[in-house]
Image 1 (cartoon, helix red, strand yellow):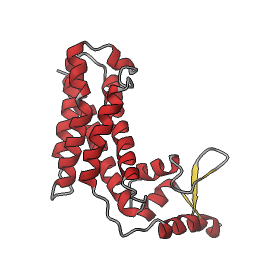
Image 2 (tube, helix red, strand yellow; image 1 turned 45 degrees about the horizontal axis):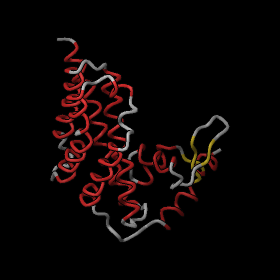
Image 3 (cartoon, helix red, strand yellow; image 1 turned 135 degrees about the horizontal axis):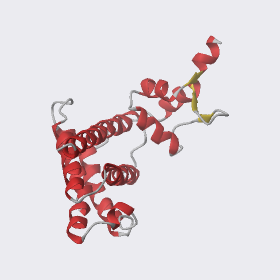
Amino acid sequence: MDKIQTEWLSLSDVANLLGVHPSTARLWSDKNILPTHRTSGGHRRYRRAEVELWMQTTHSDQEPDPLGAMQSAIGHIRMLVADGRLEAEPWYARLDEQARGQYRLSGMALVRGLMAYMASADAQDVNEAYAMGYEYASRARHYELSMVDATQAFLFFRNILLDAMFLAYDHANVPPGLAYGRLLGKMNQFTDQVLLHLLKTYTLLEGK
């Protein structure tokens, strides 16, 4: 039994082993970057030997340039917003043109907030995340979007930001090593805080 427990790892075990956020490990698994197995019940499991080999083979001395990658991501976000993906969102279809214009700027605002967070000397400084959460919540309330709509709006821009970062790193030929994972971990920490503050702020505004 002990052998099985040490040979097979859960998602949280792998995240701890790699030193990244669990959502980063999940994202790598979904993109087939990290070797993953599925149980009969559909749960992710990882073979320790495969993960350790992956860590060795993906190690690179090449340090990523997070701010440069985010600058590249801005152009990709503009392209994704312009190609009709935003218009397909149900919550967006209910907005007037003025509200749509403000939401079209949300992707770039999220990148700028993340860049300020990454550049902060204090890794625990979440003021940018709080400000972004408040902005998303107050804008949604102003335009009479529900809490679910507000969450979907944020997740739309969060997901295209992650996709844009993956694309920027691919173009820069940066391998998905541990430094890459730590960057994505910081991105997830920031966006998780934005979402939590969005929900808290929306709830407070709803009670007024």
